[in-house]
Image (cartoon, rainbow, N blue to C red; front, side, top):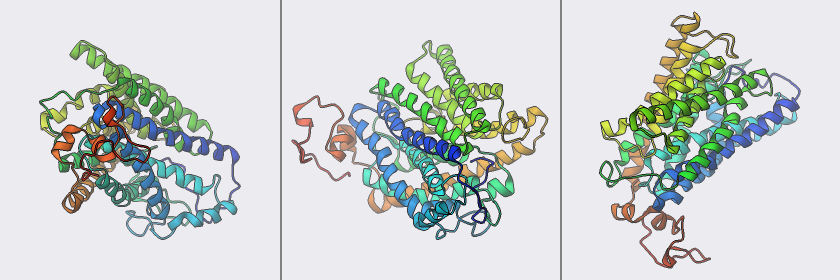
Length: 449
């Protein structure tokens, strides 16, 4: 996540109240991104599936944090068990050991807090994946997928790129042996979610009417509100990854702000030239594209570099969202076009735009650093893309065969909210509500839960 390593157990340091306060605030900001994403995605789907879309995020939050506590954190940040691929799953199982570490002052911030901060990164990543399969997934199957994906996809990748070696502690191969730079999640979060979303979208297939019927966002006000909350929370996501309230965090915060601005402008420019209109959905999507690209590079570029990174991402992603129509896959809410493509732009862009004056201290090609760092970024980004795509696809395929991942066609057409959750987002009809006990006033089949 950052060049600042997790302190080794043998290192005795006093708890730094400033670093701890900043990490507390940043953790809360990253948590805020979950309801922000729920609003963002909820507004983008049709009205008959908005609650299901939001529930996929809230359900993921619950499952991930339980599994992250039990074993996920240990897989990601435990001592490496070989080749930099996996942390020891038993070392921090249950996180009870981190309570001891806190009392002994073995870190400048409480390690239990660091564990929660990192767990919320996993929450956001899998919640992003849900956008690729909006409108058509069984909620129960989704919850099973979230659990398996957390342990088999996210936790190992987090070990690769976020777990730095320090003292007696041995971390992941990508951060330590290869030297790929990813300050806050271009690989583990953005490329990972985009590749996983693509694999899952291929497993579930296209929505009924995809390519023939308009599937416009039902509430752009929710989309804009969600985008604003995401931008706000992203400061915790990126600047919080500095793990201290210092100059590094300030540089990262500035880069995050600037890239979001130019990402918005880049997307709107494409819309204005191509379509004749600059739209609110385009503004929100461009904002997120810029933030996606700056996530890995926020500690590596100058302010001008951040402006360029955001603008390039906004322009490229505005065109990339059309790939699903060209190749025929149904990525419902453009997870591939925004997060996979934007993550690749930001990850590879480090090899071009990085400057040694920035916190990570590495020069890219345009600053006289040659091709070395670009090569490391290409290998790191490519490895995550392939691993996430293959393993996520396998998990989705197995779940589909064992319990069925997609709802029935008739229920997809009639509305997933009422069928799966016995609720509707907007109580426009007397027969569409629920009793206080939760039973339906009308009782459609409930076999798609």
